[in-house]
Image 1 (cartoon, rainbow, N blue to C red):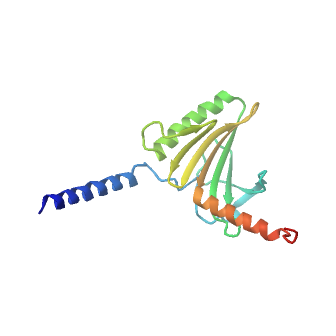
Image 2: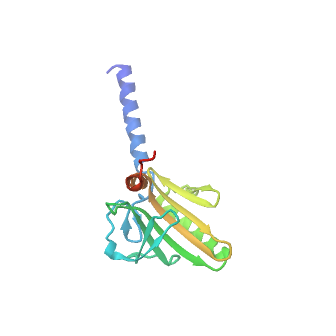
Length: 181
């Protein structure tokens, strides 16, 4: 073998090891939470209620098969027409911010170990929102409120969310009178 050929083989081998390591750098993949999975079709018969967001989107309230003690309400956001789950929400109410912050800190630790790279700084913080990313999936954690506090976790498939938003826009556009434009 020539020296150049040997260098190419070593390069290919080390590159494939690097790629293999990056595939498994996370402890677990973000697939879903509380017994439902991102990308699955949601059975609306399973919903125990609905809520509307300011944007007009419907949150489907469900009873989780795998609840977490910090949360008392669970929601799924669905793509129009297909009912594919693109976001999973859970919220918990707290009377004071200190308790909410303690639970937020605990959740960051638990989720960082489960879905992060194990480096202890898996969450990116922007303002009051904490993010952990894996490709096109993310988990956000935040506390909302001034006198009563809500701890919220959201699991999102960003690609599915963008597709759902595109379908929503198409539906809205089809309902608009465009003759005067």
